[in-house]
Image 1 (cartoon, rainbow, N blue to C red):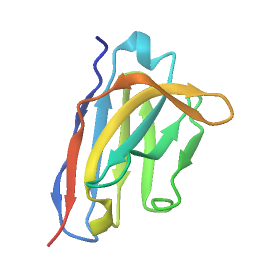
Image 2: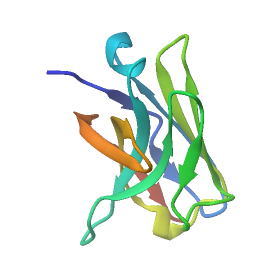
Image 3: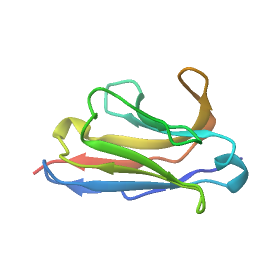
Length: 120
């Protein structure tokens, strides 16, 4: 089973920053767009940000201007820089490999999730 490995979650105060990273197998990373999703208690899993293999990005409205997704095509990693964090950003964040055809379609390649908690 393909496994994406996330790292970088934790506890941060409102207004703070965190950087999440996700490592993928080369054969998966090179052929897929990549994305970050999050799952908050009592809510559905929502797209946070996506990036195509060519570097085109897309963001949920709630994180535009605060989060930045990037990918390292040499080291097969995708990162999510999160600034100006808010309590409502608290969630488990998941890395995904998917497809981009007009919009992002998540494939069945997921990481195990990393907890981000924004609180005093």
